[in-house]
Amino acid sequence: MAGRSDCIFCKIIAQEIPASIIYEDSHIIAFADINPVASEHLLIVPKEHIQSLADVSMDNCSLLGQIQVVAAQLAKETGVASSGFRLVCNCGINGGQTVDHLHYHLIGGRKLQWPPG
Image (tube, rainbow, N blue to C red; front, side, top):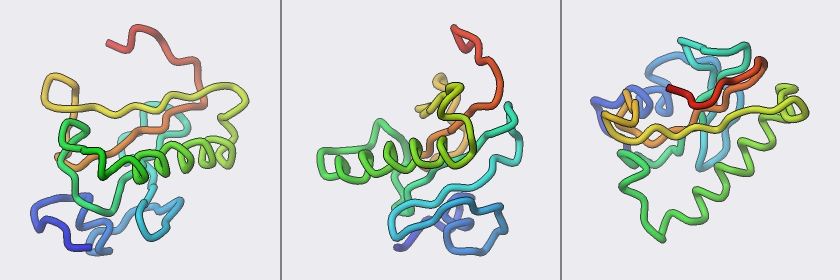
């Protein structure tokens, strides 16, 4: 899958930048966030470069479903499924998205507050 040369996640997917990869299949990669906000903080990223959640279409339904299943699996594997976790997808500048590549944060291992801020 061709990525964008200016995208840090595309570079991680292409193994041009090292990351602590936790999970990988033909469509998705998951790795540890370099600035974790909890003891468990993973990024779940589709290998296809999609800029944000605002850019998905019905053609992406299978991929988005697969991301949800992988998130649940990783929550179990990291031990946060039973105590609770949060799956977050920031979208756009005001939504807090800092990398222009669709990704989800799997956060757990501590009591999370609501509203998030």
